[in-house]
Structure formats: structure tokens, C-alpha cells
Picture (spheres, rainbow over the protein chains, first blue to last red):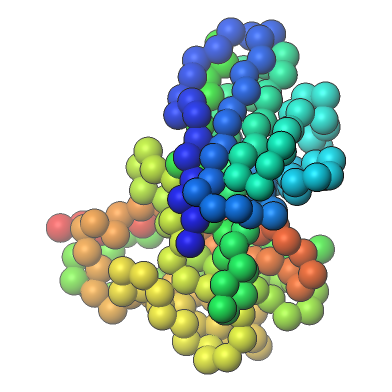
Length: 116
Length: 113
């Protein structure tokens, strides 16, 4: 398994500002993912972040809006840039762990972002 | 393309009764199927998964799910519901060769005392 922590747990931000969310894992993992969960909706993958390479973004998400860093195997950051109220969501970090019965994904507790 | 359908936004069940949360999927190749639970103000927690093998998969907290290939379903079940099972449940699928999960829209389960 993997224990994942995220900072901050929640924040209220002004329109036009940026927020960087940190994700820390208690073990070394190759694959990390960032998801968004908008109010009342399911999780949507923003990007996949592998250590040592550029993040891969899903359709509808771009690096200028959601720059990601992955400096080592236990840490990643997601920045939400030039925020608008539509960015109000829960942002979740996730990691893939290889086990005896295949890969499993574990999720952090999420960062609840409110943009005014 | 892959998709996951959870046809019920809300499921209500009396405490002690059996519960079922439905999930159907569409994916190329052999599916990897998952159930996650989200309690209020907490992150997603893994419940169980199907990769290969027995169609009936047992997971955490007494939950189980049955993989039905002909019906492309992976319904979550529990023989006797607890009030503490009240939460938001997500079905997810991973396509062969892919790394990320694709989630359904979630089903809110309420267990009534």
C-alpha cells in the first residue's frame, strides 16, 4: 500500500491567483496521477506525472494552466494557475503501486479548493 | 474508448438488508475493474478489484463484487448493510495497457437505521 499526504487540505483563493498543491508519498513510486473532482461529479484525470519525464495531460487540460513538477519518486506538485471560480474542485493525488496481484491505485485525501 | 456507467445516483437501503450498487462498463480488451468508497471529507479508499480469476471478488468491510462478462457488469454487493456504509461509491475501469483509472459518476449509498 501507500500513504499519501496532500498540502494544503483546503484553501480559499481569489480569482486570478495561483495555488500549488503538494503531494507526498511514503514510498517510492514511478507513476503519480492528478485528478479533479468538481462539485457533485466524478473524478477526472488531469495528468500523469512520471519522475524524469514531462507530465502527460489529458484532453482538456494544458500545462500552462496546470503545471506539474515531479522532482523525485516520492513527491509531486500541481499548480492551478490564474484561477477562476470554475476551478473550484477537490484535487486528488494518486499513485500506482505494483503488488502481487497487479497494480493498485491509492489516493490522497484531496485538496478542496474554493475560488472566489 | 472506455466508459463506466453507474445508473443510480442514490441508493437507499435499510440497515441489515442486503445492498447492491450497480456498475456496467465498456472497454477494449480485458477490463481491470475497481470499486472505491469516499466517506465525507475523506479521500478515496480502495475496496476491491477484479483482474482475472474468480468472478466473485471479496474486498474490504465485507463488500464483494461479481464480474459478469456477458453483461459487462461489476455490481458491488454486501449481504447486510451497516449505517456506517453510508458513503459515495465509485466504480472504475482500467483498460489493458493503460495506467490511469476511468471513473463512473458515483452512487451515494444511504443506509437507514
